[in-house]
Each structure stands twice: as C-alpha cells, then as structure tokens.
Length: 277
Image (cartoon, rainbow, N blue to C red):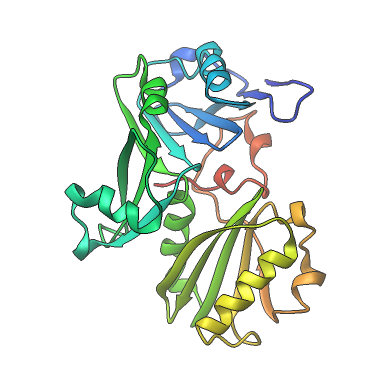
C-alpha cells in the first residue's frame, strides 16, 4: 500500500500487509529541512517509510508528535546530517575527549550532546553532535535511542568497498547544497570531508583541487559519484570531459524492503540503498 501527498517531501509508503505491531525498530535520517524514517520488522526488513519536510524545530516537533510510527517505543537510530564532524583514528580516540576532537572541526554548538560511532572494527571513530533540546525531543517516550552522524552510512560503505578500489580513488556523495568526498590511495583512506556547494563547477573545483593535492592522475584516478547528481546536471558526458575513469552509481543494497515499499529506493537517495550496518 502506498500513500503520497501532493508535496514530494510529504510521503508515506507502507508494505502490502502493514501492521504497527510488526514494527521492531526505526531508523530516522534527519536533514536540515526534512526527514525520513524506516520502520522495520524483526528481520530488519522495511515495512514503512515516512518522509516529511519541516521549517524549524517547532515544526519538526509537531510533525514527529503527529507521526504514529515515530511515536512507537522501539529501538531507534537517529542519523543527524546537520552538524559538524571529526574523523578520529582508533588508536588516538578517547571517549572522554570527544568534545575536544569535534572542536578540531568546528566549535560545537552550545548546549549540545556529543556522540561517536566506531567504524571498521574501532579503527576509526566518527564524532558528531546534536543540540540537547533536539536530542531530548527525539528521545521523548523512547526507551532505547542511538545517535550517529549522517555521514556514517556513506563512510561505512566506502570502507567496506576499499579492497575493491583502484590505487587512486575518489568517491563522492551528492546532497542538496553539499557533498561528501572520500579519497583512497592504495586502498587506504587519506581524506574524508564535507563541502558546501551551489553548482557543479564548484563540485568540480573541489575534486580537481584534491586530485592535485593528493598527486592523483586524472587519467588514471577513478571517480565514483553517488546520490542526487542530476540536481546539478552532472551526467556521463560532463564528467568524461575531466575524468577518463568514472561511474555514476548506486551501492549494492544492504537494505531490504517488504513487498510494496521498494518504490522508495532511488539512486538519488543513497540512504535508500545503504545504512550503517
């Protein structure tokens, strides 16, 4: 069963035999002006998806309180995209210093809660933060909730793929107004960052600049593009002017959908294919 509203940022999709009693967990992906969440069964298969836009914290609070799926008291993961982050090597990481590590990236917002996610068997830790009032609002009536930075899903994917990469590899994930860039040299992570952009020329400038900085060869380096590339008019013809080895791609999905919910899966939304395992 699929229910959609006229606004593309107001969307509800349900599996054919949906029942709230089947929901065992939730995953909420929170962006600056919209969110979507998965309701999953005990096997991790997606039963339903809700997607909503919001204007401010008050609007978000109202929509979540009206969201019958989010109000279920089941284990919930929150992926917060609207915050700075720091990536810390495992041997250097100390949970007591999380706020200090985050300060290296950007001064944390006052009255914020800092959290971290371990990746690659604790070889890396991605540190992020969330406003305490927002965290409290998201945690209301929930017995079990976990916070991650929104970048963790993409980063977990590229780290899993690193042994399939060539010696010089750049992978980017495009969102509206910004993109993540990951670079590997000889299958080792050498760069991961987020860049604010307005057009494809700015995206190209960052990629070319980092290619030169890392002394990559544009004729050999492979560029893989994920996410909403059409948002900026990025296509094969445009990319081929600058890189000989490239792909506009989607990951092999680690997300499984119940019958009737597969329509949500779209190459423009990376997180519809891959979530932090």
